[in-house]
Image (tube, rainbow, N blue to C red; front, side, top):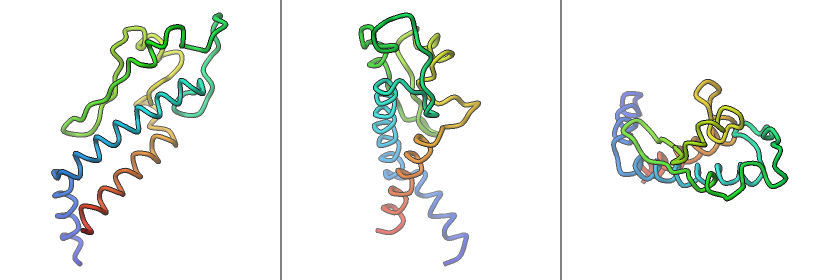
Length: 126
């Protein structure tokens, strides 16, 4: 098969229902990763969150912050956000989402690559 054929297939995949499925799966798994970070009190890069003066779990006074995250598909990918203004403040101290300046981190990268590989196989090798 010619390289141009692969390129054409990849272009078709990027506009296919399988790409839409991939985005939804990345959102689902991304929200699971965020929930896991609250459970382990670690950032997307595996580092522990800075401790607080509170005796309860870090960032878990009511659970509202942990439950404030959502994701949505865009033309160019997927975006995660929090409906809590407090998340913006905490993201600077205790990262809950990957930072664009640092990349995705190992877990997020493996998750995104795994989903894309699976959906590409399904689309290109029926």
